[in-house]
Every structure is written in structure tokens, then in C-alpha cells.
Amino acid sequence: MTKEKLIEIAADAVNESELKIEEIPNIDLYIDQIINLVSVKLNEGSERYKNRCLTKTMINNYSNDNVISPVKGKKYTREQVIQILYIYSLKNTLSIGEIKRLLKGAYAIDDFEADDLTELYRKHHTTKAIAEEKCIDILENDVIDGMMLDPEDDVDYISIICALVSMSANLKNIAQAMIDERFPEVALDAAKAENERAKKKQEKILEKEKAKAAKAERKNEKKHKNTENTANE
Image (tube, rainbow, N blue to C red; front, side):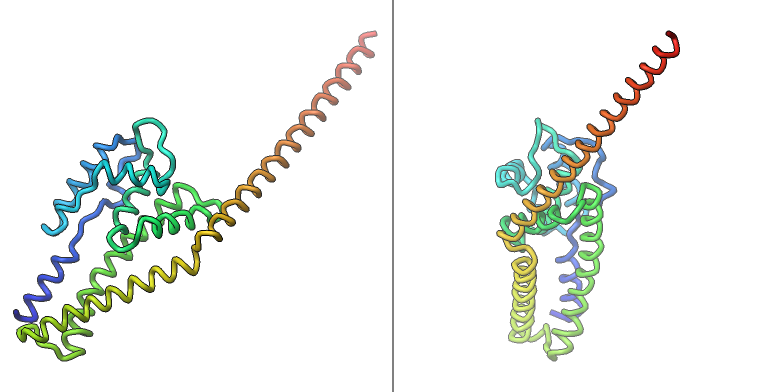
């Protein structure tokens, strides 16, 4: 196989088509509508991805494992749809448990809301596109040329495959190590609990301030009424 043909195969191999943020409807969707959106989008990419369909079982498992926010009724909010797509995009490399920790880590950030998840998903698409181009560059310049391997030689062809597998494994290990470092299970639970305590404390302060303001308003109204009564007498 020529080097040019191998690069062509590699480019097709990374041509995975996923829903962009602007292609996700800003309305609640039934599970069948989510699956259909993903299926239609898959057809725009490489043939190799068309059998990697999103299924009802997968979505139900995400929900049962509490990887996505609790679902109310039969429809999924846009935020939940983005969560599903995020999981679907990462699940071939990370375990569901690791993805759950990653999302929990995001939501543990102060004031992290649906808009922040939208921006996170947008950045994911941008960096993924850059990574796809980088993969081809690494294959051509670092592996084939850098290691002086000839794709037309059977032994070198196998060596190229092994080099790519090693890189893939190492990059996966790095990603997992980063998750372990920043989002350990116990620390995430503690951070979430601390955020909840801080939120409840702030709510109590606001309630006290409202009660105080209401009391002062009633006092002023009573004083004003007494002044009017005195004037009428």
C-alpha cells in the first residue's frame, strides 16, 4: 500500500460526523427523536461509523446510572440531550464511570449551568476537529517519515499499526490519569456537598433579609396608618 493510499484511509477513518451544537433543537425531545437526529448525522461521515447507532438501551442506561440529569416524563431537555451526546462521543475511550466523574466535575464548578455545558460541548467539537487533523499529521510525519517506515513493506505496515496503537493507549492513559487527579470520586462528592451547603446558606440569608424587609415595611405601614388616624382626629 502506498503512503498516499494509507493517508487517504486514515482520513476516512477519523471522519466521524457528530451533531454540532446549532443542530440540536432548543426544545424537549422524545427518545426516538434523539436517536433519529444522531442516526441521520452519522450518515454524513465515514461508512465505518454508521453501525455505531445510539440506542434506547444506551440512553436508558445513562439515565439509570445517573450519568445524565434526572428525566421528568418522557421528554429530554436540550441540556440532557447534550449530556447524552457528550457521553456517546466519549464512551469508546472512557468508561461510563469515568465520564460520570468528568460530568460531575463540571457541574461541581461554581455556577456551572446549562449554558456552560453548551459551551463545553462546542469546545469539544472544535478540539476534536483539530485532533483529527493532528492524527493524520502524526501518522505521516512522525510515524511513517519520522520512523522511516514504508507502508508498502508488510513488516513496516504492521509496525505502523503497532505504533498507532501504542500512542492511542498512552493518550488514553494520560486522559484517565488527568481524571483521577482532578476528579477523584470522594473529592467530587465533597465538593458537591460543599456547594450545596453554601447554596443553602445563601438561601437562608436571603430569606432572613426578605423577612426583615417585610417586617420593616409592615412597621412603616402601621406607623403611616397611625399618623393618618391622628390627623383625622
